[in-house]
Image 1 (cartoon, rainbow, N blue to C red):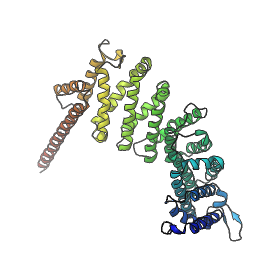
Image 2 (tube, one colour; image 1 turned 120 degrees about the vertical axis):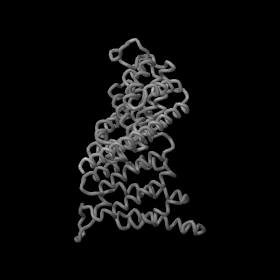
Image 3 (cartoon, rainbow, N blue to C red; image 1 turned 60 degrees about the horizontal axis):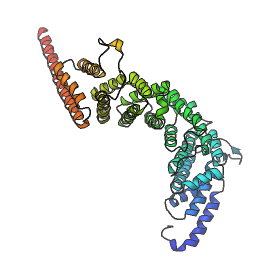
Image 4 (cartoon, one colour; image 1 turned 180 degrees about the horizontal axis):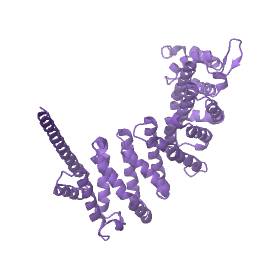
Amino acid sequence: MLTKYKDCINDIDQILVYLLSISRIPDIDICKICTGYWETFVEQDDYRQIQRELAVVITETMVMPNDILRVQDEDGEIIQEYIKQSDTAALYDSMQHILQAITKREPEFIQSVLHDRQIIPSLIECYKIANGDENSSLPKHIRKAVIQLLECFILSIHSQVDISEIQGLLQVIAADYVQSSDQREPLVLSLLANIFEKIDNPVATVWPAILNQTIDILFSHTLSMLIQNFSDFPEIRAQFYRLLEVIVKRYIQDIFRTPELLDSVINCIIWGTKHIQIEISHTALKTCLFVLDNALQEEDDVASQFFEIYYVRILTDTLEILLDPDCRNGFEYQTQIISKMLRMIQEGEIYTRVFSPEQVSNPLMSNMEFLQNYILDLLTNTYPLLQKSQLEVLVMGMFDYSDDLQRFQNDIQDFLIDIREVDEESVGYERAQEETEAELELLRNI
């Protein structure tokens, strides 16, 4: 309607100003009516000044839970119970939608609102109040809305984020995540990932605390939820690996120099590569590629220590996953990792042994000789029905074509197809034998 009657611009401005004044009335029913009008209004790109004023009103409304969430009983007394929770939750969704629409167009203005009107302390108080009743769905809904608003604000800012503006609220949200056990909100991990992608100054005084808190959230409180199987907490699982990827890319040099943290990171990456969910396995595999690339660029002592500890383990796990028919959704990245690791050896980019001399018959053997024998043994044990000469040709080709990814992938693909045919023939033979034995047993009983 506003678009249709733009000629009446003065009247429309007066109507909008009046609607703004009504929206400031602390009554939940009036708030719901006004919010319904504003949801349609903010989809337009006009009336920027009105939208800015609306953002202030909506923000202040959302952070006043004692007004919005309190209702009157039959005697007109204010009570603290959450009544009509579905209505209140829908109202918060509507207000959140309005703010997100305005934030995307006016991120700098929203940032000034948060700062000048000291909205963050109110959001913190709102979050704490909504944290009081775990038996109700409404407090969870409100906490989620606060997180989504903060995330929208982070994503909408074109410049990098000044963490000092949101540090207090972020710490409250993170602490709640730690204490929530099985009721943890996946959006917290998403929020942290977005913040670390847009941080302003990673060496600022507030960052060590935020980074340490994030690492604690990842490895001390979230990882244990994910390692029991490959399916529980799917949303948290996906956000966990996204946040892990962001942290690794941002702080890879520090991770290489922190042995305990590096070990946790590698464990998580390998666990992630074993998932059949494409989003998770691909994220883990890409993170693994990033770690390998950066290990080569490190100082010799750092790189040598990394490859001594993790080279064979990463190669072994990646090969085993590649050969697992249930995990071939990551073929592209799996073959990239394997070819890259073999090329490192082929081209002499690794200056230390990747094996323990005590575990081989010839301690003086080269990395190349060790790995050729190692991979051949792995394939022989995996496919005992194949001739050793056939596997030897495959292993030699893997090294020879490690610098030609397309040829490398084609050879591996052909091998996997051949293996599938051999497996099918083997299954058919075993089934035929079982049927023959069943017929003979039947004849014996006649």
